[in-house]
Image (cartoon, rainbow, N blue to C red; front, side):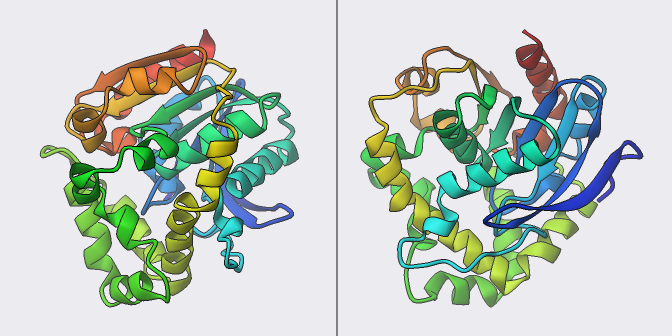
Amino acid sequence: MDFGAEFKTECISTSGADIHLTHGGKGPPLLLLHGYPQTHVMWHRVAPELARDFYVVCPDLRGYGDSSKPPSDASHGPYSKRAMALDMVKVMATLGYQQFAVAGHDRGARVAHRMALDHPEQVSRACVMDIAPTLHMFRHTDQNFATGYYHWFFLIQPDGLPEHMIGADPDYFLREKLNRWSGPDARFDPDAVEEYLRCFRDPQVIHASCEDYRAAAGIDLDHDEHDRDRRVECPMLVLWGSQGFVNRTYDVMSVWQAYAHRVEGRMLDCGHFLPEEAPAEVATELRRFCRD
């Protein structure tokens, strides 16, 4: 899906994965990271607007979209947020940026959180969209969480169970996720949805995305427990949707204030998919936050 004439698409190889990305614009660098079960295309309503003031980089996370799908292992370490964050730091360095702002949605927000902890000299500002910290969510698991976020517990099942079940009808599964997690008035671009479907039909993507969640329930928690006494040092912006599970379940700002030193935030009138349901507000908030 074309973001416009000023954007170009390429593949950058890191030590761990080949990362497919679209980038363009003018100004200071801003890295935008997508979530599940999507690709970098989810930024199609935001990236062209921000490209007026920033050099915008929109990659597919390893395992997603047209980025490579490295083999995993018993620890699921190749799909840890630490590994994904390192990919992105190396991509930005290849583009000539040693320091940059990052904004992530859903899984991309978890990568951004880990990146801010692991690479504080590179991350100048971080925005996370519609998440609470992984460690907090697992520590406060109850029936409400297990029901609302059942996919966290389904996708981590071993022996290829979720891969087989999703693979039987990946189009239904992806469309169901978009419908369940968005607000009642959400309207997704048909071309964007078709691109999500094209990528998600690949059995390697289904497997890699399950590995992403398996890592979150294992090695990511080990990393988060180890760093629990540390807080994100750079300024952090938290955005979330008024009609989503995160808003219904958590006191979002108070939770994040326990994980970062300088936090500001705002609730937007939408469901889970902020960049597609409230693109103008997301662009406005990121422009303001990254310019301050």
